[in-house]
Image 1 (tube, one colour):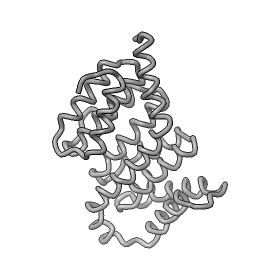
Image 2: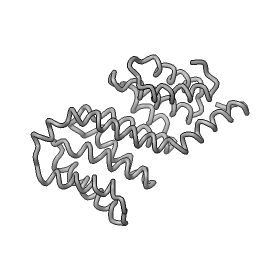
Image 3: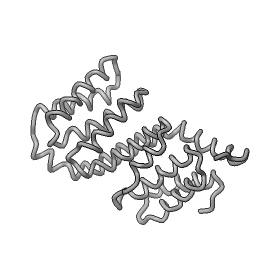
Image 4: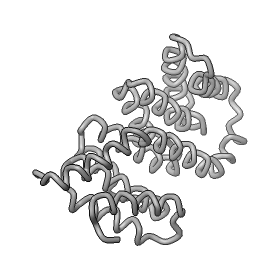
Length: 215
């Protein structure tokens, strides 16, 4: 779909904003969502006190948050993650480690590895409450690879508590795909949801305003 010059300038403003802040927003969103669902997983942490699984998780967590990263961090993450996904699938650790690793890979430019880590949670994790978090992350990774239809497929059936976030991400994908009308529609539907965070509302309203849509 071709946009006129004015529309393209508005779209470029949104894209420029995303290029500057989008990675930060995605990272913060992931951390917030992980904290949100962490409450539900805490019982599993108590029930699965496997020292080896915890050690593998700590390896991933430490490498991801390494204040002084080194060349071996990626290898440590991949090896620990592989062990968790293979041998400790029934514990609370592999899903969280996979999402942490996915974020790490995104930040270090390895979108293939990031996609694989997030996809594992969607397809293999035993923790159902972690799946929508992974779907949001996976949709963003696919969008950044211009795999728009695959990205949208991750967002088709959200749980009620994630619906606004899914709609917001759909809007981002539609915009990248070149469908301004669909983007505006998704963002407006997101604002119709109840109990939204004020910062989230301002962000979505800004996107709508930049594209010249009425709220």
